Length: 295
Ligand SMILES: Nc1ncnc2c1ncn2[C@@H]1O[C@H](COP(=O)(O)OP(=O)(O)OP(=O)(O)O)[C@@H](O)[C@H]1O
Image 1 (cartoon, helix red, strand yellow):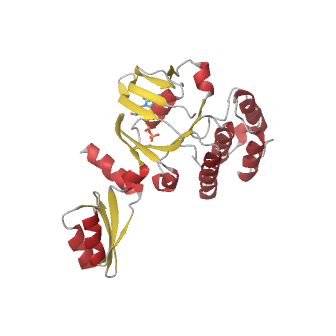
Image 2: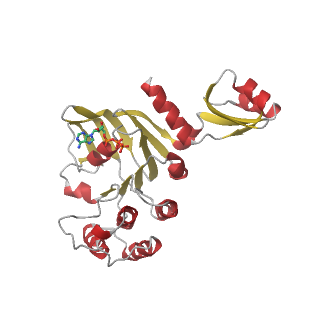
Image 3: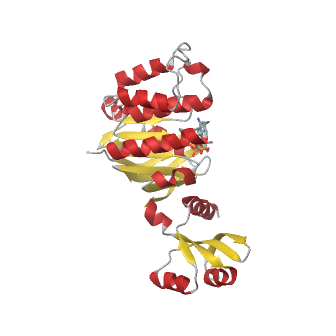
């Protein structure tokens, strides 16, 4: 059974700054959830409270009905990997990659040592290297290895790709998806690179100014918009009474991204006008929805 995280009326303040403002949300699995939102919207704060790193100012987070904060049993089932740096313990400057792996093997009940070694090879890490001497991208890769090989029932990656180059990031996405298929669990991925991670996501949690803007099935969210491509005049006529998020022109061809669901009649009309209708990149919807919330 994959666990269920129940978040009820969660508030978190840092002094006068309100980071989380009454979030109520149920996160379950097996599913890969994407946590998105603009800078400062509260993603890291929310994940820190979910993983028991921080105590909420009010409200609660429960894992299968048990509070997570200072609850060792619940915390053993949760693994949060934050941006580069978490794998480096500055109190132990001589620690090496292999020490971090050994520590994780001791702490994580589902740790898979063979998989960890395979990931170390894939990310071209040297187990003998000191953690303090790794580049930012290499430190992130260590975090990714720790997070994946832990196989925690709730696995959370918070901007875990910081400093990783594109081949390494895509290796991470590939590994995450393949390992998730083999070992389904509840995964939360927080990322600014919405287009890059969107193919992984089954659900999207969107935060804005510490509030939950939406939690929706990724397919349903994609269906909230459409990309219309075809001859300039035909596209202009089709989108005339719609919210256009962006348009591009190439010669006599125009591609317009519109917000709002297209029904069967709309699709028939588009086909009759010789227009192609495609899914909208989640990034476009995300920009639109968060801009709308600002207004
Ligand atoms: N340690 C802290 N002390 C004071 N304020 C903080 C602290 N950490 C975060 N904040 C504030 O809380 C709010 C939410 O920050 P948080 O880091 O959770 O957002 P985020 O969505 O993860 O941002 P980003 O995408 O930029 O990483 C912001 O207004 C931020 O300035």
